[in-house]
Image (cartoon, rainbow, N blue to C red; front, top):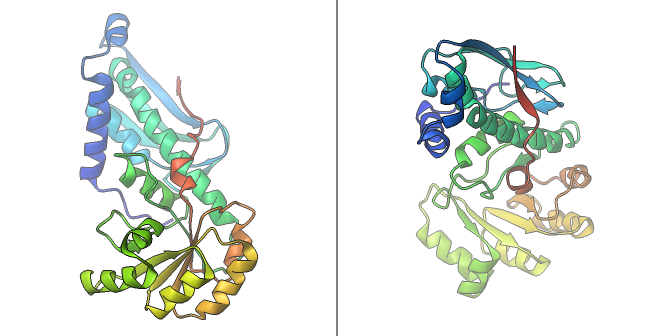
Length: 282
């Protein structure tokens, strides 16, 4: 998998904030029980089938706690690991390993959970489908960059980075400004020429209004399967089509076969379960 790496600045910022939260006042248990001259080696091991994500962050936790610690990677982000597979080894002084262990695992378990959930949706796409699985802005506050990277590790794609990245007119925007056409017209006048205008629609009537107003992208929100097929015929290639809302694993092939361009799923970040990765002492 050809993944753009996480920027070092992003990793450092996330790791330092997490360590300040957990270690700012020290580790009374470790300092009381484990002398600094005790050496150790640990194995990061998958305890269930998962898609790995977050190894650079995992490593950065330990090297930030103690630059003399060594992390030996045995896998790469995006790899599928079976139960028992080794992702990495950590070598060095036991005291700082213990201080970084929980934070390092929190990152790896969370990010791998997002990647694993994303990969399951991507795998449900029919062979040869043009449809992309994308995330949304329903991310853990402060962790968006890491979770969006994890989505990419799972074979998914990213939606807009933040509110300034693109125009996305939602139902409440429509309600606040008096209709789909008015919202699109105002957005077109305000947005830079490099920005596409996307509009969420809940009904076929709103879809017609958005198309007539020249929306570049239409988001079909909570359309059932039959109405979705009708909507795709109505669009007829005049706009990029995104589907969102009530997306289940079973519906992925149906939605993709209708010819939509992307399926956005908030659950791949806001409801991803942390997977079982453990740090076993050798």
